[in-house]
Length: 593
Image (tube, rainbow, N blue to C red; front, side, top):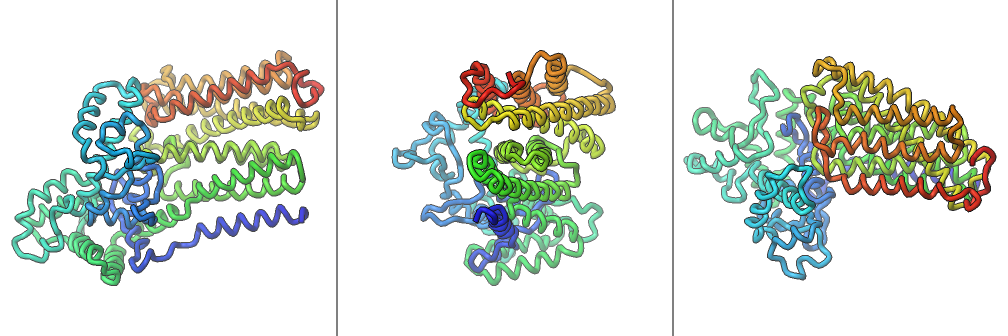
């Protein structure tokens, strides 16, 4: 049993991971996956409707599935179809997450509607829209960084409600018109001009591709804009007729007609938009596979096995943990490569991708360390960092599409692949040194598992990783200065992000000098490395929360509480390490005082 445990665990994990890569079948008789593959232009890039549905739901409610009133689970594509064609039905789905009780009090909801609930429907929130809008108008003049928790929640909810309302203007106007009937009845189009003008103004998606022979293939139009053009001159675009007929088939429950329309429409787009369709199809498969979620689960399993291996079956459980972490790393690598192909960019372009890459880099280093030391320590640290960074990435994805267009000043694949990748590798390795140090301190203070060989091994790993981190953070910072000189005409400007990068270099240098000068031994080295987590977290996230400076592209204030909690935890661990060595549960290793 013990002999085959590691291989058995790996085979089960492989089977589960492989099952996530299988294409989904039809949901009932409607070919919803085919509908999700249809391309549209949004946020400056062509993307499938599947991505529109998933990113919208993540932003509005923090998850991709929709739970109907009867408990049925509705796919993202089905939800988007209801939003497009039956908004009255979509309005009843509870997709707006409200965690703040003060915000919830703005709406006239009964005790039965709020007890134990955090998600509410558009219909439920109608009664409080006026008061919500008033509170949001009071909050908007306040600087984003200075807003109270209530003000931030009010502004965010109003933005979500506005976003949802604009989605309903993509193909209809909130159920007030029947486009299929308009196209089928002579003279009715002109009567709905005002509706088409509203669609042109409020629609988020450019859903009508350019006509054959157009000079630019990225000149897509909103459906309202296309219809207004048809009223003044020219016939109705075939894409408009397709979406009108698709809505009629969906509303009347005609799956055969629905599926036939989707197939024919894709075939018609293929000659002109073959590359866009292939990219959309791949993006849909990527969305459905969710490689980062699979990696997250595997990291948790690997961490638990690695920790248990310190107490029992060290060889077998240690091998199982290593192999699970290797599989999770492979899936994360595939996910990052897929994003690079879809975006046509290096791996790090925004805060979301930086979280993926930092975790990926730290896990890669841990795989090397674990292969050398074979004691489960690097497996536990790598799995913990991999899990933590994927959780951070998930929370960052709640703000919208993570494959966003680049700002003009960042539009340089050369510097993205040199400065950004190098400096984030420095982030990853500094975090890794800190997490290895946490394992040393917690095992030493709280358990009896920190023997001399393990302590010495951890000390060597932390020292080596700090050397590695110093090199990459220094080189990455210098490369950033060269990029800044080319972009803004100055090498250094004491920008908050620049200061944060410099702090990492200086702190790693402090650690090395303290070690070389004999000012610290093992325990001091570990405490300094743990404090490096605070310095790196500030450079990574804290500088963005200031909302100032030339580097505030990834500004976010949503993670402020998390950052404070992380800093407090690191300080608590350092304080725990100050307990006299005689009070530690593990014996005092030689050289570790």
